[in-house]
Image 1 (tube, rainbow, N blue to C red):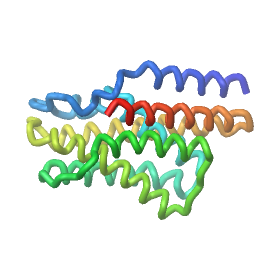
Image 2 (cartoon, rainbow, N blue to C red):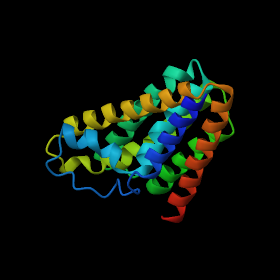
Image 3 (cartoon, rainbow, N blue to C red):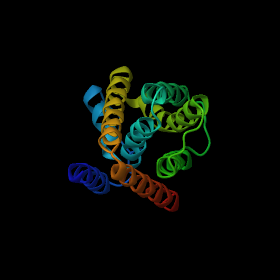
Image 4 (tube, rainbow, N blue to C red):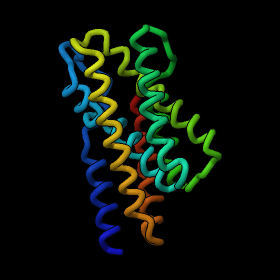
Length: 195
């Protein structure tokens, strides 16, 4: 049991010391796979949203367990394509902040909607994250490699979230997960304030 608390505490500390949400102000010129891979780790908004998808999927169970971590990068790629094509999507930064707030609340209150609604929520949130980066891709030397790196990093963050969710399946671990969800939601509010 103490090990679960330690894992949860370390995860919260790691997320708390990550750099602030500056993830959408990058110079993508010359960017390739390495830059795309490292980018999701550069902003608290990305880290929290992507880890939260994994935690929520683990908390919700099957079929969300495998569907949500697939839905997010898929919709993120679609959002990226919209950004590359220059299709405007209003409220991108607010949508990203809403993703952190919403996912945190879903975890904190242990919400388990029907799978179709869960997929729709995750896809909507991912669309905002993807569009923000799709608008950067036209300047990149290798948009395909940048995008692939970004998606691989996203998958790793989802797996990290799934791991946290599984490690916290003990009775008291569930409380730690829900408190962590509240902390994620509070960060989402802070992101809104910073807009």
